[in-house]
Image (cartoon, rainbow, N blue to C red; front, side, top):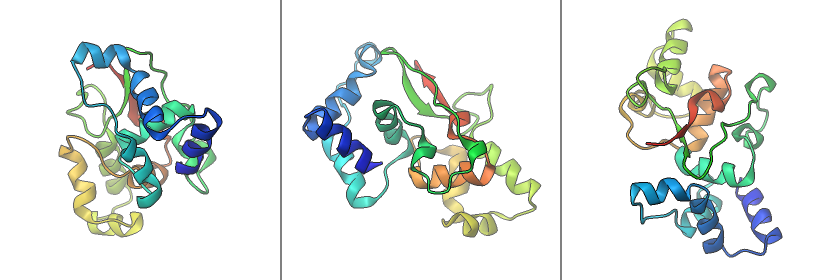
Length: 173
């Protein structure tokens, strides 16, 4: 994803702070309405190259700017998991729906994962080994306030054989 960001940045003749401004401006009405004065930082974008990852919530800013789906950046993504992300105007921001308490009417990523785990008769440690993480990273989704690593979120959606778009919504807060 970093290479795609950098290529788009170069093509549009932007600095990294310029990219960060454009990402934040995509939901400018929402930011103004919420009184937000802490936009995404340029180093949040450049750290993707160093870390090879970012939070799933920050990734949505980047994906929206790139007009790409998360599965575009998952090697060997299952064809059945491809679906466009929701559209969002300047009054909304894309957000991951991680657990049911975020939107009580819809099961989140945690609930889908827990159901899949039970369907496959796996204990959390077994599933964590399959996904290459610790069990607490999975069980912690149930109460997550912010985000998980994008690579983990995508490993989960691929394991579930569902598109990331199933767990992303255009938030108005």
